[in-house]
Length: 85
Image (tube, rainbow, N blue to C red; front, side, top):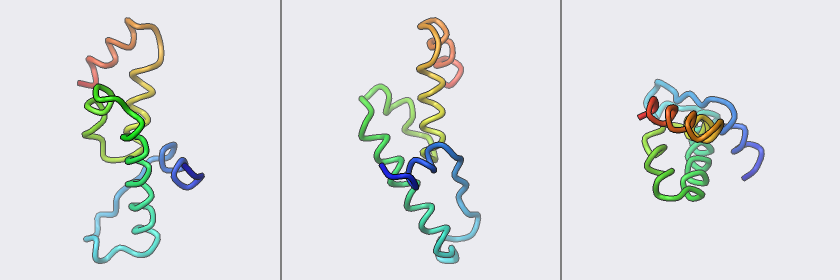
């Protein structure tokens, strides 16, 4: 994963409200990078983790969900997971 991909994981991606045909080059590139970052994260996860984040719309959302569910004690993790579901 290169810097541009990781940057999208750490910083929120906002999809353009314009139709895809009207996107400029930067919007297209950012969307493409977000898709690649999401794919890299999905491929690194087991079935249970994938199911937890499969509905996320961006690499940022996937990463934040994983951070929330994996930090703290087991009891804290379980309660956070229940809140997300």
